[in-house]
Image (cartoon, rainbow, N blue to C red):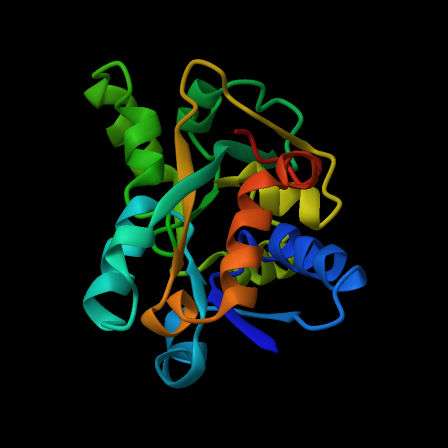
Length: 222
């Protein structure tokens, strides 16, 4: 029996790995994960979705509005990850260095990262820091995949604010987690009403919740 799983790209490397491990010992169940922005898989998820996962609480709330087949009572926060700064300029050693004149910053304002850089900048109520960093933002992407492509093709950008999991999944070594300004956001997992009736979906749902070490390998905490 197939388990149709849908969600964003951020958690996908971990989810797909867990699905493959799940499939190794299964004869009757097979987990299939499709990831990307909601418009890529919305129609399929409404038709055959068993499980939907998100990249943040606000993303799951958005899914609830647009995917009425999600069983709200099944939503469970399972793992979380920190914000990070990928850098090219080795002089960028702290979050405040992003405020230096001439620094070019790439940010994501969507896909579970709405307001992320602002929350990092304003963590201690430093409005001056927020205004200085805002001046240095050279490009805003609306999902992480597009942002990563922009980063790879625009070598003049000095720093890139995104979650650590994207650096890990793409084997990027030059990044750090700004401890004083770090923001954590979680991923949720949910069953659809169809998934509620699919014993394989319920088994995989619980399997994901217990797959702590696999998610840790991909940069998630629990």
